[in-house]
Amino acid sequence: MTISFDHTTLGQRVLFGTGRAAEHAAAAIDGLGARRVLLIGGAAVRALADTIAESAPVVARIDEVVQHVPVENGRAAVELAERAGIDAVLTIGGGSSTGLGKIVARDTRLPIVAIPTTFAGSEATDVWGQTEGERKTTGTDGSVLPKVIVYDASLSVSLPAHLAIASGLNAVAHAVDGFWAPRADPINTALGTEGIRVLFPGLRALHARPDDIQAREQTLYGAYLAAVAFASAGSGMHHKICHVLGGAYGLSHAEMHAIVLAYVTAFNAPAAPDAAARVSSALGGAPAAAGLYELRESLGVAGSLAELGLRERDIPEAARLATAAIPASNPRPFDVSDVEGIIRAAWAGEPVEE
Image 1 (cartoon, rainbow, N blue to C red):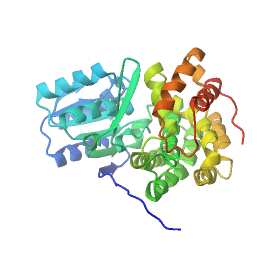
Image 2: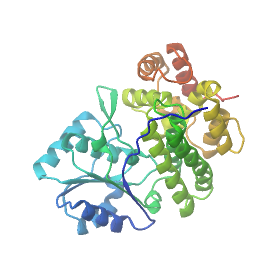
Image 3: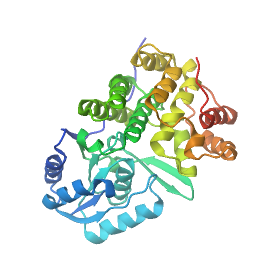
């Protein structure tokens, strides 16, 4: 059997060190030669933002961030950057902060330094997303890939345990969906495999001991690998469904991904045996889809889309929107009824069996 693929490795500097976020942020900004920085970070990271602002050339700040990045928020951030003569963007927080910074970078071509406080993984991708009129649009653009990532596991300690776990399961979704995404290849598959190999035990340890900094470091490392794999492979069925659910119905991002993943895996696994085997191996031998369902249950994350606020009457519309977005390269053929079945099962939180 011959091997043939076209792989692009995205270039970033990664500074990883617990307790060193401020130090590494200063080094990153200095390395870019930035002199007028826009700092984006919500109220939860104000103390770190204040510390960084004391030693870095921060001339403008945004302290209100909204998940799924409403278009009007992105527009206002771009206008602020232009008025203030910004030459770099520093984001602190989860995917919402990073996402807003990406819109600024997309429209101004400014470099980003990203300091994640969750396991969202957005900092390692060239994917942007924003919401307008209850519809989420995503795209890829090399300019939105942060030039530098500053990882500090201690920054996730303030995140409530259940949200940290949900964020970690979102990272798992990056790896698993990447196994059957449009640009899947042996390199990003290897990265995703290693990602879930460390994510599963890391999340279990984090659930058992929320103050275990080594578990947080392991989870953060795994989340980075999964995000790099996802950035290379692209969005598959799982992410296209979740983009619709998040943008149209405002569902909690990380918990939504945590819930939907097992049902998409149950649908695709029969047609993607290699992907299923990789997930099963990382789970210790449990069947892939059932194992992902049982993992989420054991970690105490919300169990259904109904719990997150999705109304049953919205399921048919969500299925139509998602079906139009799912890549034709999905390993198993699908139609609207198949996608509606996946969403309905996730809405009800039905047990997954294989």
